[in-house]
Amino acid sequence: SGIDIFRVFDSLNYLDNLKLGVDAAGSAGGFVEGAMSYTGNVADPTKGKYDLEYYMNLADKLVNDMGVHSLAVKDMAGLLTPTASKILVSALREQHPNTPIHVHTHDTPGTGVASMIAAAEAGADVVDVATDAMSGLTSQPSMGAVASVLAGSELDTGLDRKLVGPLNTYWENV
Image (cartoon, rainbow, N blue to C red; front, side, top):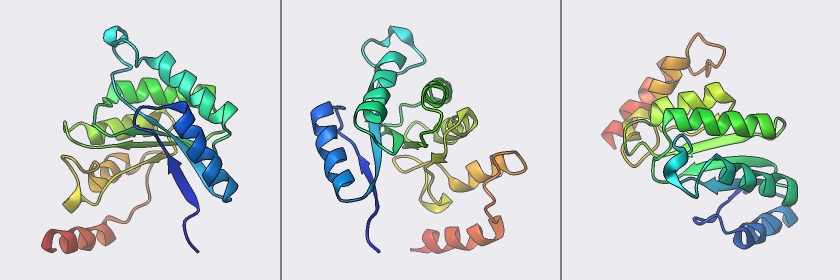
């Protein structure tokens, strides 16, 4: 019992701070998820410092140098577009084929559902969503929308929508 998965992140991707957290969580016996705080736009190479190469180098340091068990793309501002999701997750999957990839976003611009579907199709193992009644805006993308779009595909979530409905009703009324 207790906490056994630790998502370690630094909002500025400062490696010394990341290493401190990774080492502490690892020495406690935890499963360590090294998170890359996403900013910029990897789909637009004119955006400066935060390009695809930046994130690939950071992922290498987290996986190869620090030994994290999984990688997370932590998009705190909802900047990750569907195109950027596909580019970044595809490159991470190619470079780290045996490392689980987890993508977290906020639906602030309204593109979260499309971005999470693109991430899943590009090889993400986990994408974060929220129950429909609590999704959107500064929360995570809609679970029902993601599950409905993926239903019947090779990425079908297996969620029983008959069981999800009562959850939404409950949270709508809270």
